[in-house]
Amino acid sequence: MELALTEDQTMLANTASSFIQENSPISRMRALRDGGTQSFSPDVYKQMAELGWTGIPFSEADGGMDMGMAEMILVTEAMGRGLAPEPVLTSIMMGGQALALAGSDAQRAQWLPAVIEADKVIALAHLEQGGRHSLTHVATKAQSTGGGYRLSGEKLHVLEGDSADAFVIVARTSGGTKDAEGISLFLVPGDASGLSRTAQKRVDSRGCAVINLDGVEVGKDALVGAEGAGLAVLEQVIERATVALCGEMLGGMSEAFERTIEYLKERKQFDVPIGSFQALKHRAANMFIEVELSRSATMAAARAIDEGGDDASSLVAVAKARCSDAYVLIANEAVQMHGGIGMTDEHDIGLFMKRARAAEITFGDAGHQRDRYATLNSY
Image (cartoon, rainbow, N blue to C red; front, top):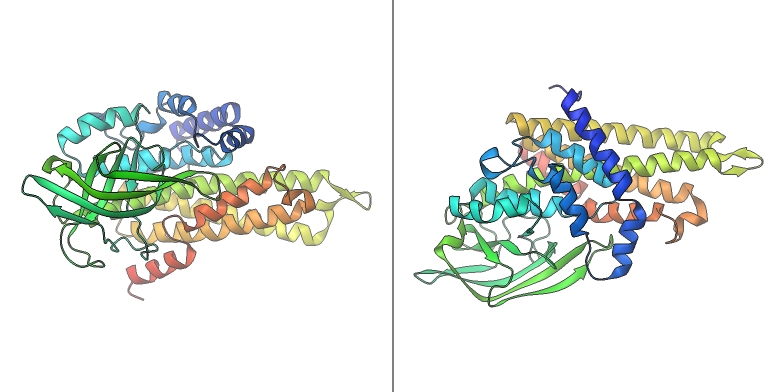
């Protein structure tokens, strides 16, 4: 497996890095957070689409770039460095990918061009109370009405659910709450009768929502893929989204590490830079190792998905476990090495710690991923 970047990938990485530096300083995220209205900028998101970022994982037939995860993580890594909150993970890698993988021709034609052009946002609603990270824990019901389905239930922690134009809802058409069989996906407009949302903010200031489905009526054409066969699609979507998130986490931990190194060089104590103290050198070296291990694991997972490798799922679990541990460790160390100022909201370094905490549990924390790796490899 080749882990070196190609010339085109290097160009994409440099372009993404330059765009984020120029258009997404941390101060922009602060302004969005404190503004209290919308958690991302539609204008910046539109510019990302114009650069082709939102089309990377989609086929040319759907209006995309027909590229892979190896390219996608270069974009999300740059976004992670600037804590850019635009819904690439949500609308492109979750809701959009569900339609790309299993949507009908009509569904893809209606929604994917608008999603790729950043005119519409589609969110994936799959988590429920008591399910934690399980994809098979689905209590939301989809009852057949003859001409369609009636959806009833509640979805939690729906990323971008506060502003999404439509949802891919995971519901059960048969079986018990924890059964792998009988899970189906439905495309539901955000303004559907009986659908209500309660907007929330995560600790990292990203937008999410609780989605309530009170007898939402949809036609048969709302079904995404085959009835009862939604789990396989959902698993593919979450795996791809997990790798994209790992790319963002890699960018965040890299930026936090580099900012800390600069501070260690500038901050003086006893008339010498604190970075000259051996204890801090050792801790900084450990942070560097964690970043590089995370980079290798993330790149390997991305390429395994692109190549259709048999070990792709295992490598995704390894990457997420590695990135979860590393990002939290590096963010904690960064705050502590900055001293008292690192604990204040006015200093940027604490914002990386908040993002690390939210990203750690998204799609399963390190413990969950290690259990998953063990299960996949029959341990």
